[in-house]
Length: 151
Length: 279
Image (tube, rainbow over all chains, first blue to last red; front, side, top):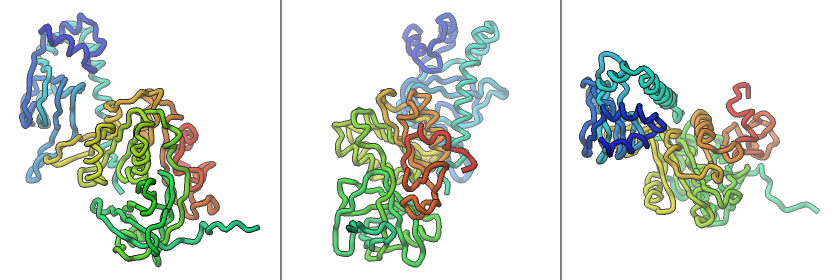
């Protein structure tokens, strides 16, 4: 756990987080590595983890019947994956495939939610950061929907 | 005494030497004078009025290398009657050319700076000469980053050249698309998101941006968010240019004629008009 602290502290999502809160996050953290072609999550799978990517590249895909998967977003170092663990039914709605060797810190969401419930100040801080992340995601998604390059 | 200057309203005939299909609806034409290669000096970012005989005239940015003025290069998207006529031309066919017109990218003026070249869709065509010019004088610039976004991988212009550029050690190339099939191993996401990955020193950076209006608007916001000032950002605007010399008024945009005062504008000079719906 010791070696995860500097990685988490330097990650944009957690940068500047109070050391007491960082300690709480670390208690839910473990290290995972995905080889190219391995999936971090699959559509309909239970969303039990929140991934903090610190190395590699991930394709976020939606599977279309008879047409195969379409990549809707690439994620890399400094980004996070997983926002469905906040809301029922806690299932993934997409696939995420490692495009290259990808190293993440995976956070156990049950553990994280539990700590949020126990310490509302920590919960607020986490939600605040999450709200910012979601706002950025919405902005990006709106731009994608605008079909900027169409005729 | 009367100066012996060519009349800017009279097209000069050029001959199509080569036509290359870039995407499903976009073609690059190499043109020369009928009597053979002749220098056609231009500055990066300038445009020509291309006259398809019997169809009409359209403004098209020059997309070739300013250091190779013997061939005039234009990349044209088939979107209307005149561009359809141009895209159907074959080697040996004639095309009228008036120009070059307009204010170019400030490539020489920003020497000494880091350079961000940010293109969306067909916007790479008017920016390509600027990149050529920077690379032709590479030692005069700091970090050089090309950020290019398109709708899908099939819509990327100049893919072979992008590969060549990506292989250089003195240029960082970021390519992204809005959506892709599973065989695309590159980035998927909007151009604005890539800006955070580029290496540049904000106070010493010039950003040259060309693409659809929505893309430029959000790119400007992102550049300012990353520390650039409005006077460090240059945009190429598109309007209905007709005469090319600021006489007819077709391309009037507030106090500007885009053909004469643009198409390249420094953002701080146009920000009051940028995205204003009434003009």
